[in-house]
Length: 220
Length: 261
Image 1 (cartoon, rainbow over the protein chains, first blue to last red):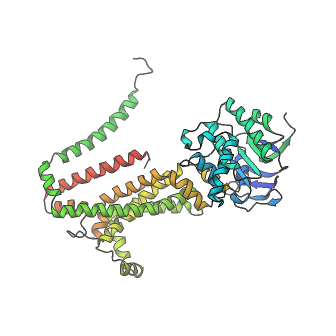
Image 2 (image 1 turned 60 degrees about the vertical axis):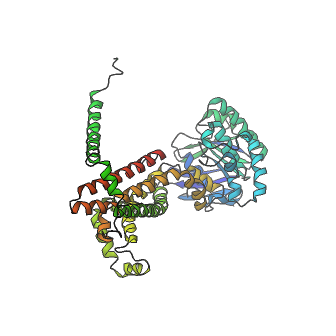
Image 3 (image 1 turned 45 degrees about the vertical axis):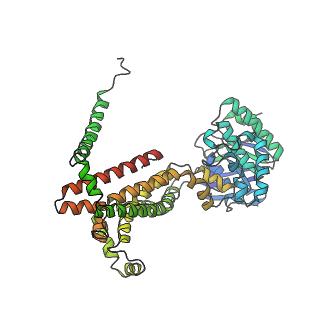
C-alpha cells in the first residue's frame, strides 16, 4: 500500500511556486496504478519523495501502514526503476542484480541463486556477464527491474520505464511488468506521460496537474 | 561546389585565428628545439646536477599529484553533488590558488610556517627549505586544478545510479565507493595528471618556500632559472626541452582518458 498525505514540495528560495501542492492519494496493496502527467509536471519529484531521495516541504508518506517520511531510501521497502534504467556503469549484469543483496549483508552463498532466479524471471539469464554499454534499451530495463525485485520490495516505483525503447520492446516489457506484478503480488506505481502505457497497464489511474493529483476513472 | 559544401568565410576567419595561434606556438617550440645540438643537450641532461633535479622533479610531482587527487576526489564530489549555504562562496574560494600569483603563494606559505600553528607542523615534519617544502609548494596550487577537474568529472556522471544504490540499501559512502568511484577512474587519472603537469612547471612558490639549493631542493624549473641567471643558455634550453617532452607525454596520457580538463 502507498499513501501520500498532503505532500507539498517547492524548490529552495523565497517565493518559488510549489511543484507539488497538497498531493494526497492511496494505492491499495498489490494494485497496478499509473500516474500520468505532462513533462515537467512534477512526476519524477513525486517519485523521489516516495523513494526518500528528496524530502517533502510538508506532508507524510506511508508504505504498508508504516509512516516512512523520514526513513532513508534503503529502509522503505521499495524498488525503483528510473527512466533509463540507471545501471551501474562498471558492474556486470550479475553484479548489478546482486548489488542490493550484498548491501543488505545477505550471505554470498545465497546471493548467486537469488540472482539467477531474478535474471530468469525477467529473461536476462544469458546476459549475466555483460556490462551495461553492451545492452540494448529493453535489456537495460529488464536488468533494472531484476535489480529492484531481487530484494523483494513491497512497492515498485517505475519512472517512465518504457520511454526509451521502441514500440515492439514496449509491448514485451508491458507484458513482463504485468506478469511481474501478478507473480510478486507487489504494489506498483508506474509514472508515464504515455496514454498507450496507461491504457495497457493500469488498474488505477491518477493524473498530476498543477501540483495536485486527481483520480481518473479507469481508461480501459 | 554546391552551396551546401561551400565553406563560409566566417569559418575560414576562425580557422585562420586558430592556425595563427598554433603556428606561433610551433614556431617557438621549433626554435627552442633547434637552438642547440642533440649532443650538447644529452651532455647537460646527463650531468650530475640535472640528473638529481630530474629525479627530484619526478618524485615530488608524483607525490603532489597523489596528494592532490586524494583531496580533489572528496572535495570535487561534495561540490558537485551537494548544495549548502555558502556553496558559491566555497566554490570561488577553491579557485583562489588558480588566480593568485604563484610567488604570492610561496610568500603565504613561508609566513604561515613562521606562525605558532605552522611551527608545530614544522616540528613534526620540517618543510621550509626542504624536499617536503617542494611537495607542499607544488601541492597547494596543483590541488586547485585537480579539484576543478574532478568536479567537472562528477558533474558529467549522472547521480541516478547512486540514488538507485541508496534505494537498494547502500549508504551514501557505499554508493560512492561501489558505483561512482569506479565510473570516475578515468577522471581521477586525468585530475592527477593535470596536477602532475602543473607541479612540473611550478617555480615561484618553490623558490620562495623551499629555496633553490643545488643537489637539495633544485627541481627542473629551478635548473632553468639557475642556468639562465649565470648566462648558461645551452643548459637552460636543454632542461626546457626535457620539460617540453615530459609535458607532451602527460598531455597525450590525459587526452587518452577522454576526460575534458
